[in-house]
Image (cartoon, rainbow, N blue to C red; front, side):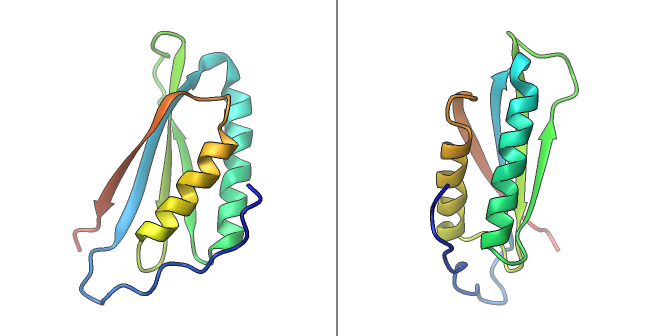
Amino acid sequence: MNEPATPADPPAPADAPHRELFVYYRCPAGRDAEVRRAVESLHALLCARVPGLQARLLRRPEAQQAGLTTWMEVYAAPGGIGEALQAQIDRAATEALDGLREGARHTEVFVACA
């Protein structure tokens, strides 16, 4: 996570949809505390680099499946999350979760309805 601070995406046109990211993945259930610490550090780093970035961490409440717990990161920013910021988040998260995650991170993009 030694990537230098980068400028946010260029401002989107006023009528452009406001993009938010929802990223989910699975980690071994016995490593919940490590995952939480790693993601909290990741979010602190990203929020320091990107003014106005909001990051949340969620975990499924039900029992794990096949010994895995499902986690979700949610990202929002003024003007939305553009492709450059999404790539920055993905690079930093890949490094932060190296060795903690089972399988891929799955990213979904949603836009605000109003």
